[in-house]
Amino acid sequence: MKYSSKLSDAVHILVLIALNPLDNLSSSTIAKSIHTNPAFVRQLMSLMRKAELISSVHGHAMPSLTRNPADISLLDVYKAVEGNKPLLHLDTHTNPECGVGVNIQYSLQDYYNEIQEIAEKKMKQITLDDVIQNFHAKLNTYNENNVL
Image 1 (cartoon, rainbow, N blue to C red):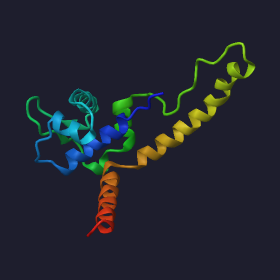
Image 2: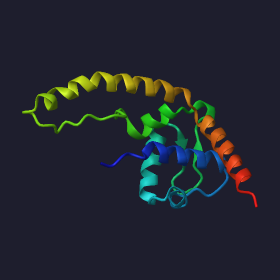
Image 3: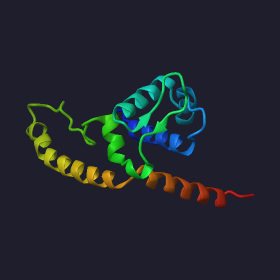
Image 4: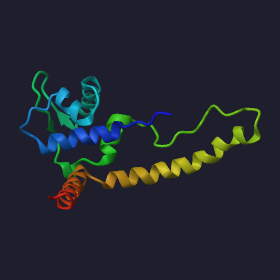
């Protein structure tokens, strides 16, 4: 089973843009940082442009945030790259002849909906600025612990 890393990668891109506003941030440069391919980066950036989280000009490798990092929530980014896809997914390929297999999905759906609602509420409270501040705190801790 493959898990989506779109949210993580999109936040990575946004942090790169926020921290390097004057640098050349081509899709190739960003792809090296994420350890993926430039086409995937362009796909994510296109989704974030459509959601008006970033702006860019074709042929110029200097994307920019359209809002202050404090005004971009994780939910904004999630909705931009995942749409309305739920965080948790039911297994729809259970055995229809099994009493548990037929009914377990109906039993789980209410809980999954509740988890989705709670997660989205929390994601709405976490901003890109929070992520950037936490990034700096982790970086400082790492540097303090790894000084010669």
